[in-house]
Length: 557
Image (cartoon, rainbow, N blue to C red; front, top):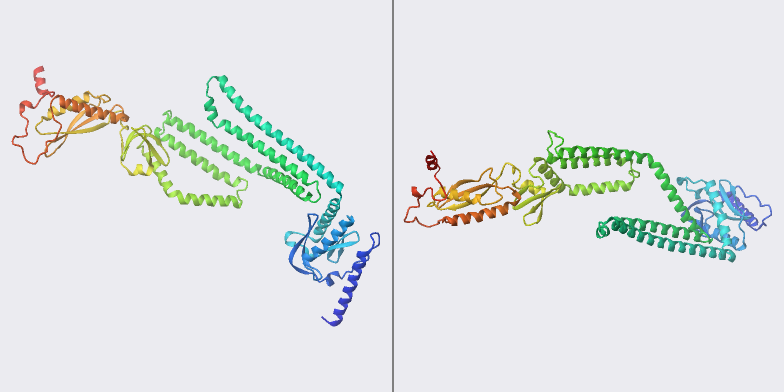
């Protein structure tokens, strides 16, 4: 810069400082000298190192971002604070005005300049303007000065303290009243419910006390009591804070937060009503479809409606599958219409659920597919008496993931569906109407007539209860072993679930009958051939209780 320009700038700067000093010392009613239009050029406005917020009387006024005349924003804030403190000490509250200087603005209180706002103090990215920030800073400074002067008046503080004490006392009274009403309503609820049960004559007081109905109403009243308590305390504290100048901004922020939250929720609910109505229609249609499915499959299960591709025993699991798919489809259709479905929270929850399902789906899907195979292959039904591996008992549950079997000892055994599919399963009840043979075997030596053994086994079957006569018991010579003959008695049980008890009674009768006729049930195992031949003479072929059917027919003729 040329030397003459530097000298001119220095002269103008000194003149400007002198004029500002005179303006600051001018009386309130005196005409202020005009501010030179070269302020911007002389002040040396540049971006500051860091932002600083001017806060006076606990109220934020404006954020300063520029460096003016070599002073950083923090130094500008400290200077403005000293001026405002002096003004409040003198009891001066205004008027607070703004004066434009080229593209900048000065904020004055009376005739004293407090601070200047430049274009570099404005955050244009946030949509701020110099005029708007100046207007907001002027209003905030006027309010802060008024409250600072008010805070210096003892009478005002005493009045605020008295009002706050009265409000807090009223709040305590309301809290005590609400607590008593809550206790009385809870006690009345229990007494009224017990009186109704007593008048009905059922005498189920213990069942009522153990039920969840009373717990629901207790928690409902507890929630209402907690809400009222918080509201009373919130409004009492907010009102008390607004009575004192220094804490008034806190009280106002609490009130504004409550009002803004309620208004925002109301606006959100009002804005979400069309989408919520769509969700309601989707779930209404889904509920209608579920009701129709329930009616249809209940009729199929009760054999009132016949469908070629569906059996009555598979109607109930099919209804459950289709019901789950219907609700799942409804949830997928309604998801985009839910308020907040596009937020990051919903997206994060969706990703988390998908990750959990993908990690644990292998075993889960395997069990579910196995349950479908069990259901639609009709291998098992509720109430069937089955044997799965080493487990024998009655099927009491066919679930999506497991099958439950109740054994004869009263134990409930849970078998994963994949194990049921991969294991040989014997169903003793599937053809119980026509008769299912249950085998039992004995081994008798070759010196005992086979006709006698057959008759003895049939006699033991006749003496045993819970055995069907149709189909009748049958004896088969199942094997000719090295030292004995293996006889197999096939019987049909009346009640397959009593299989163990029936077979035990049959074995006892076999022992009694063989002992009664002197036939030994013991295989003659030996290391060498005996001296006598192990044969049965013809005269002993029909030893008691066996009879010769051909001879009996000849005699009758």
